[in-house]
Amino acid sequence: MPESGLARSLAGAAAQILSSRDDWEKRDDGVHTIRQLFEQAEPGDVAVEALRPLREAFESTLKDLRSTLVRDSCAALAALAQTAQDTAAPLVRALLPVLIDQAGSPNKVIRGYAEECMMEVVRNVHSKHQIAALCNLSSTHKSKDSRDGVSCD
Image 1 (tube, rainbow, N blue to C red):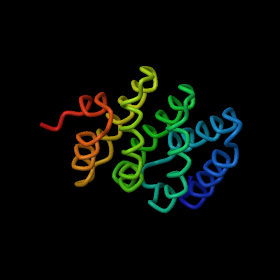
Image 2 (cartoon, rainbow, N blue to C red; image 1 turned 90 degrees about the vertical axis):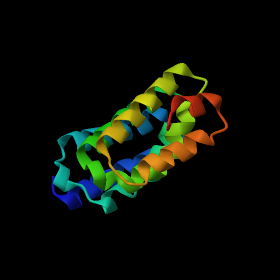
Image 3 (cartoon, rainbow, N blue to C red; image 1 turned 90 degrees about the horizontal axis):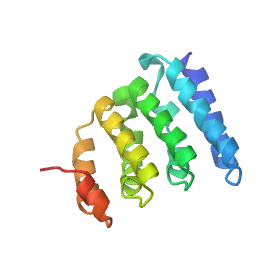
């Protein structure tokens, strides 16, 4: 998919997520669209500018209390990381606090999705600031589970 078409489609899916705050199924459809777009895209198709509209959309869906929406958001973020790789570094850096919050969630299901997602992101997106940010955020997090879940020793 050409970059401009991908950027337009991603912006449309992000808008669907953000405009449907009270309808989780429409939000989940937007997340599925994002995942499919990245599964079909080639690594060279993704530009940083195309990812900008996704920040607020992912922040809202990753923080949701519905484990289905968090699961699907984590899967979409993993697909994004696999396809966009280092191009996704700014977006990943912005989403790390949300993922760390969810990794400390009292809900074990959501915690599992967030931990798995963080591992996939770290595996595929390389940034000199990423590990330091992850260690800093996790070591100072208010949740004991978040602090214990990430070892930076």
